[in-house]
Length: 222
Ligand code: GRF
Image (cartoon, rainbow, N blue to C red; front, top):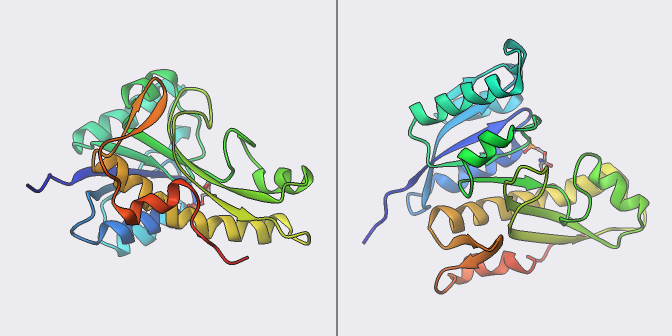
């Protein structure tokens, strides 16, 4: 029995390299999700052109056109519903979301964050990991909850921190890992394999081997 592919919206604010990784993965007809919409809060987000080139519908809802976060979020919610979106992927979306928006998409909205959460929520994660003397750093895909960069963890990837790393060299290594785990995590959620119980990840049944690796850590070259 083939399940209908889930309709996914990707929310971006910038260059959209994670968005591109998701679009490329979903180009495979066997991938359990299709990218139905890329929505940006900024008209100048580089990712919009990349999405359009890939033939994906795009939309801009400029947060500056709204007098409150709640009104901006309501406009996004309306658009997502109009497009029959099943799942939302945040990919470098640089706006905090209101509690009511987060609740409306509870367990149907995921985010990628460039650290091994719960370490280093917020900004400048690579700089902070280096300053803390971390020898491992990485990235996390998680279900979104009202508190920023929190929520049940779906997958993580760890990368080594080199002693001479700068925030930029470390960011590049982590980003390569992000592009690997985000499509895997979306496949788990869209395929109904990853759910939440008691605010922890539950895997339904047997994990296909190609999806199993990222739950520990894929191997990366430094
Ligand atoms: C990524 O590092 C992601 O983890 C963070 O914002 C950055 C977005 O980069 N949330 P891109 O737009 O996907 O290239």
